[in-house]
Amino acid sequence: MSKAAFLIAAPQSGSGKTTVVLAIMAALQRRGMAVAPFKCGPDFIDPGYHRQVTGRDSISLDAWMCPEAFVVDSFARHAADADVAVIEGVMGLFDGIGSAPLEGSSAQIAAITGTPVVLVVNSRGMAASAAALVAGFAGFDPRVRLGGVIFNNVGSAAHGELLRQAMADRLPELRVFGCILRDDSLGIPSRHLGLVTADDNPLSADYLTRLADMAESSLDLDGLAELTSSAPPAAEQSAEQPPPDVRIAVARDAAFCFCYPDNLRLLREAGAELVPFSPLADSGLPENIQGIYLPGGYPELHAERLAGQSGLRAAIRTAVEDGMPVYAECGGLIYLSEGMETDHGTPAAAFVGVFPVRTRMLPRRKALGYRQVELASDSLLGVRGELLRGHEFHYSEIGAMPAEIGRDYLVTRRGEALGAEGFRHRNCLASYVHLHFGSNPGIAPAFAASCRTFKQQIGVNHPL
Image (cartoon, one colour):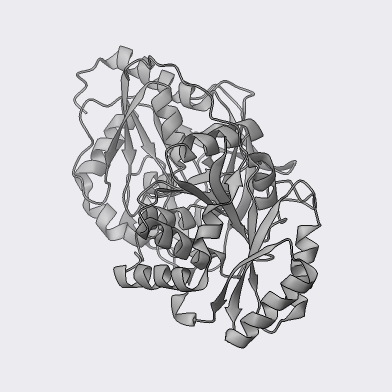
């Protein structure tokens, strides 16, 4: 496959790559190009902004959570019908989970997809030194192809000329795709470790226009669109996909917005019809469903509204007690607890109450990082001994889970045992870990099969 594509990376976090990526996407979109957005790593927040700008799901590319072949196929599949693919990197270009430059890094994604890298350099306080920095990145790993550079936080037109001249003198083979003048008004508000979600802080039309204008005036968009990836084509799919035979309700709203799009794709390919519903707005579950998926998000920000939908909360409790397969992660786990509590330990908003614990928010981050999960018992996601991978990031904690609640996960972090998790009540499985279903080809089929078993036991006319 020769696809117009490039990966926007940076020497370190805080260089402005998210703003640059959004500006490029907005400008190309305004030109009438179909832009396929991607994000390196496990992040959910940046992809929400990508979707707002491009109108398409932004696909997470992560070669630690998923096999390289899956990543390459996912990239080719989602880029196939677009005019250009734009990948946003994570952290610094070569920063991953260890000292190896191609272990969970943006560089790894660039290498395995054959996508050229455009380096966004924060040039504040630098002139010729910026060219030295770029030279170091260009020669660091021959498996990574550096296509050019964008200088950000440029102080003036004269500063930009100094940067261009330094590159022409020392690195004439690398293109300078533009110099962006310093403009603090184009920053995006931050919260916790990353950005505020697109649902809680949607970008205004005026802001997107200013981003696109900046990209048009400051960047060589035609040159960027000439960069190409050498990723192989996506694997061929069967022309005769059987019709779905189970219906899974998927929570999708501002409180439950963290879900890898490939998880949903894999469920569809496993024979599931996905039926979206909103715990914030709906009074009950969709009709004739045989499973529920409660993804992550920030339910704590919408606690009162969620608590107000008592009919839906009761319907989910009934579904769980009836044995319906229910899978929940992070925010979904919080929603299935008894509810929130204050800093002083007093009960606050009430949630579903499947698990007899309450959730409280902490002033500091509780957990962050990749997780490997071994299934400790047969589960709705697979059989005992299967290995799954995902990511954990939260500022909350739940109370001590009673011993009678099952634990289906043995969780490790880079070989370090973190204990038993994956809480199970009847056929409901909930965890703080955001699993990527691409990490194990059996996850989505196992979930769909659990729903089929429930359908056979209860029948299609279940009152839910």
